[in-house]
Image 1 (cartoon, rainbow, N blue to C red):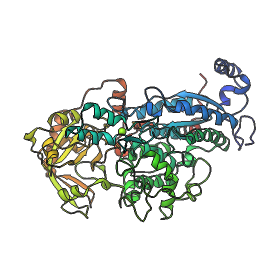
Image 2: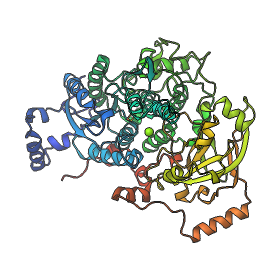
Image 3: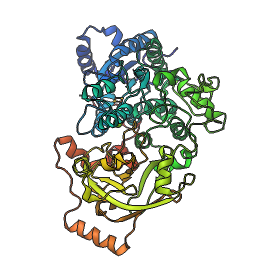
Image 4: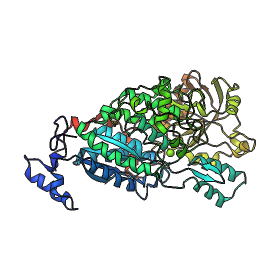
Amino acid sequence: MSSGKGETAQGKKLRSRAWFDNPENPDMTALYLERYLNYGISREELQSGKPIIGIAQTGSDISPCNRHHLELAKRVRDGIRDAGGIAMEFPVHPIQETGKRPTAGLDRNLAYLSLVEVLYGYPLDGVVLTIGCDKTTPAMLMGAATVNIPAIALSVGPMLNGWFRGERTGSGTIVWKARQMMAAGEIGYEQFIELVASSAPSTGYCNTMGTASTMNSLAESLGMQLPGSAAIPAPYRDRQEMAWRTGMRIVEMVHEDLKPSDILTKDNFINTIVVNSAIGGSTNAPIHINAIARHIGVELNIDDWQTHGHKVPLLVNMQPAGEYLGEDYYHAGGVPAVVNELMKQGLIRENAPTVNGKTIGENCRTTTIQDDKVIRPFTNPMKAEAGFLVLRGNLFDNAIMKTSVISEEFRLRYLNNPNDLGAFEGKAVVFDGPEDYHHRIDDPSLAIDEHTLLFMRGAGPIGYPGAAEVVNMRPPDYLIKKGITSLACIGDGRQSGTSGSPSILNASPEAAAGGNLAILKTGDRVRIDLNKGEADILISAEEIEQRRAELHAAGGYKYPAHQTPWQEIQRGIVDQLGAGGVLKNAVNYQRLAQTAGVPRDN
Ligand code: FES
Ligand code: MG
């Protein structure tokens, strides 16, 4: 890569020069230099004009899913050095999906904010985003989108397949199953723990197609990772090699001045919606992908998910929708094989750009499916029409439903028709948060039957706060004993990507933001029309107005008090899930490296 000292190939000055080589301000240059020299890096290196590349480190002891990035970063550094750059690794706010209480959903925007400050405020010319566990991927991509310096993502990779008595055990999914086994008396507590632990045999993120595998695959379909990077299991040698290649490539990207805004085009977002359906992606994907679009300034809304995604079939046979796990997905060809299969149907916008400088079409044209049990051909999919439906009505402005997980039994019970999506009507039973649900679900006086609709409210970005994965609720014990294992669940919270429940989720606005879920009462009749995409409480407009007035007079929907400063701050500025759950003020700041220049001297 030939370019002048401290410049891009187009002759643009690297931003790190403003710190380490600014002839107009020698005092400050000396000051910046002396402190970075203190760990042994030399003035020669810092003033060499080589690109300085950040490695945004999301791994740590408290984020075990991403912890392997501590190892991978060594190979990333090798790659950066080999390509003529200088690496500077830095920590970002950790987010562990399973460990963070009250929910990791609270922290995505916090990690985003802190990454923006680091990328903008330090001498970095480009960045490697270490992604993996659910919220780490969107947080890193959102931050890179806002600052808009050259950026490339590197997945940590999924864990190896879990096994128990000769069967695959997948992250999260095994918990739902093990719970049922323990409830039925088939296993005791010790075996329950053992069974769940068997799903996590190595370093890496969840090996099912939960939110982590989804978001890592989508970071690739967005063009932000090297082709083939998403699916490589964390412990494989190929993962180390990919880390090195990623380090090499980011240096070239700085010389080429290839920025997130050059890659994250509308075409990439549409492709990503299509890929999400084909992989059986998580219902968290629309929240995160819409957030990334808002930060890069691409017009994308919740309806695009139905328009471009609903009719796409499910090709990837991975738990929770299917049988297989991360290693199998990798051996079957991963994201490039899925994209290739979709390309043959004309469903991919092949000219969409990617971080390696080639289009997604060029990258995926020759990668065919390697195992058609794991990635099914388009002509023999797992399920037809695997994308999301968007619902709206007097209950909320928008909510989504993954119709592909509706079982035949469920269709017959609610819809009275195994083929048509149709409409159904039932009595609402309403819970205010998961604690309320746990207390009352088995209470016989609620008279929950197999046609009841369970509602969860107070679980959105403001109400919970952070939006918890609590909308999928198990039926009362007395129904489970009769063989009814799922009821229709509707709510303003999220659902774990490892759950296969046919819930209506992410309802916006949430009860706590003045949505009509707040005025719903147990006993109300509710009608859901999946063909028309409608969800309504069957009460008159006058009744709605009266209930709204009563709620207003009572001071609005009540939710728990703030427990931390960030809970309070985020509650005041967070947008609804349908709009990506972003910090509203943050979308006013775009492409900072271009629009705001470098920050003032300190
Ligand atoms: Fe971190 Fe699933 S809990 S990836
Ligand atoms: Mg989750």
